[in-house]
Every structure is written in C-alpha cells, then in structure tokens.
Image 1: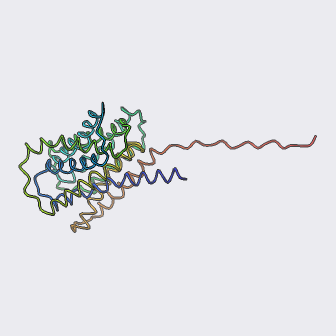
Image 2 (image 1 turned 45 degrees about the vertical axis):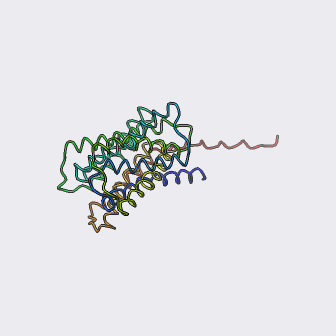
Length: 303
C-alpha cells in the first residue's frame, strides 16, 4: 500500500511540472516585452540556476562538467531556442502538435540508450496524445512553414535526448544539485546568443520583473526539480507523456483568463490527451506475477 501511494505521489508531482509549463504562454504574452525570446530564455534559466547553486554550494566535478553542459543544452538552451523559432514561424497549434511527437521519440531513445522494451500500448498512447493535442489547438487556417516545422522537430528531439540522458546519467548528488547544474549551464550557453543576436532589453517594468521571476523560480527551478526527480523514479516514456498536459493547461488558461472560445472538438481533444496519459502510465506498470494456488495439505488420518 505504501509503495502504491508513493508511486501515485511521484506521478502527481511529475505531472505538475508540465501543467505549470502550460502557463508560460500567457505569462510571456501578458508580462514580458515581445521580440526577445533568447534573452527571456537566458533570464529564465541562468538566475534560477545560480540561485540554486548558491543553495546547494556544490559545483560539478570531473566528467559531470561536460555532462551538465550537454544536458543544459539539450533540456534548456537548444530546446528553448528551437521552441521559440517554431512558435514565431508557426501558428501555436501547429507548433504544439509538432512538439507533441516527443513522447514517441523518447520511446525509441529509451530502447536505444536504456534498453527499455518498446511497448505497443505506449506507442498507441503517443499517437492518441498527438491527435488530442491537434484537436485541442489546431485551427482550419493553420499553415505550415518548413523552417518552423524543422525547428519544432529539432526541439522535440533535443528534449527527448535530454529526458533519456538525464535518466541514464545519474550523478551522486541530490536532484536539487543536478537541477542547479543543468539550469546554470543552459543559461550560460544562452548568454552569447542573447547578447549578439537580439537587441538590448528595454528597462524592465514591475510587470516584466514579476514575469521573469515567475518563469525562473516557478516555471524553471521548481518545475524542473520535479521533472528531474520524476525521471529518476519513473520510466522516461511515462514521464514524457505528461508533456501533453502543457497545451491542455494553456488552452484552459486562455479560456478562463482571456475569454477564448472552447469548442466541442477541443473538449474531445482534452479527453484524448487525458486518455493518452493514462494509457502511457498503464503501459509502464510492472506486471504482477500470478501466484499459483496453494495446494491443499493432506489430511492427517489416524492409523
């Protein structure tokens, strides 16, 4: 019973991370200046990473310097850069649908790097989730830009590699320390691109500071701590399926806070996404062995 409760708590805590990521769009558009994607990504990662480093007071060592920067690039620098390129060049629905291929990539990479079996139910769940996201966010006027699609796929591949390698490379430190390393490394890698590819950020307003603080402390430090904690305890394919929750929360926030419409087809998309997440968890549950029935003991008859 305690094991089941612990597993349920791990699943719920891990699912909370992508649910919070679903608020990124409304926070970015409502509180931050437009046109600074790399600068915002850098400010989201680097201060949070440095703050966590001050808390843990432990730097990478040996081979973990290189691994921290590789994972920082995969999970933050390159992933966020491709995500913003995709978001700027594609309608939001198309970008979300392209990115929804990530759980399927994680299934393949888990087989390659972790030796995990490819479960048919998990693959079906991945396709159902993609279809659900498409129903949730696509519009009839959605167009396809080749560069945007390529960036979306590159971002999905980057995050998928980061997800699997985070599980494979488990350092002898706490999840908080591991999160600090990756966030700081990802933010450092973004600094030159933000400085040389984008204009200087205007003088921030109180709203800008509040938005950056939320994205850094809640949307990065807190959520990725939950995400990496989940990756240490749950199969990567099951963790990746929670990513479908981000467009669900984003759509709900648009409906609740911005007065956007919610059509029946989107409600069907909600149902498909939730079914996909549930199927993904079922696919990775261990099969309980069937205990053979105990044979009756022979009766002791008096001689």
